[in-house]
View 1: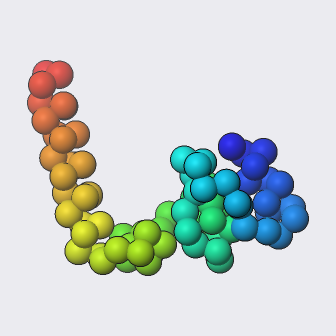
View 2: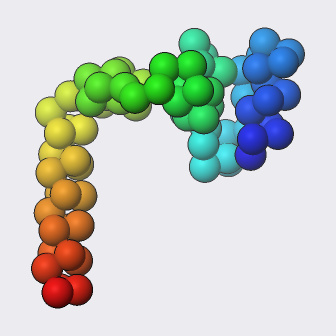
Length: 78
């Protein structure tokens, strides 16, 4: 994966491999979430929504559901 990212950045081309787990339809970051993280570091939920093409509210819902699941796992492990 990192080789793919490095090659795309080196050639300044967007990744054509849509089957890659890291692929995202966002040309400004070469269609790669790894490039996004490398270029920007942490990003806000609004930036995630923009890149995913969904609303901020939907990203917030997904975050809340994931946090709820993590909390359940932590509580079960005690």
